[in-house]
Length: 150
Image (cartoon, rainbow, N blue to C red; front, side, top):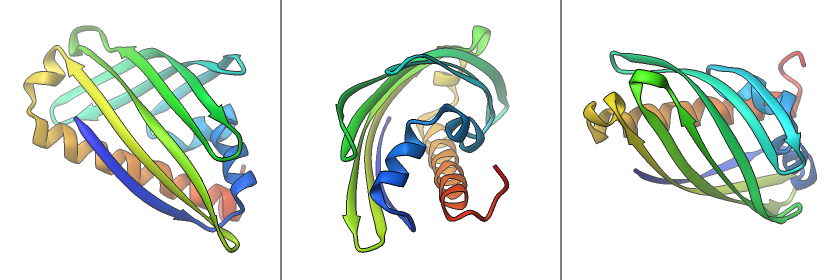
């Protein structure tokens, strides 16, 4: 699965960069995230519960940040195992550009799924992925503009 997109966030680039590197903020914004722990400045451990169609699974995984160019860009990659449901692995290139008082975040994602998840079909996986991405960016935008309690 490949997916790309652009989000306009009403916050300065430095604030968006800080949020994208803050485990507490990420945990609050990632749909289904039960825990997110910083193992090092570039490595995180995550537990995320997700439902794709009829399959619901809890994924335990590792996330690595690389190609860091603060506050402009980085690559995030990871792999998670969901037991009988299968696995998911992939990465995303994330870029932040200033546009006045706002930040334009662009991303390109590539991901692979296996096990029962792969049997669901790419259309269902793609639509669920887009929905989860939209929820993540909505939560991030709300946290950055102060409309939610932190």
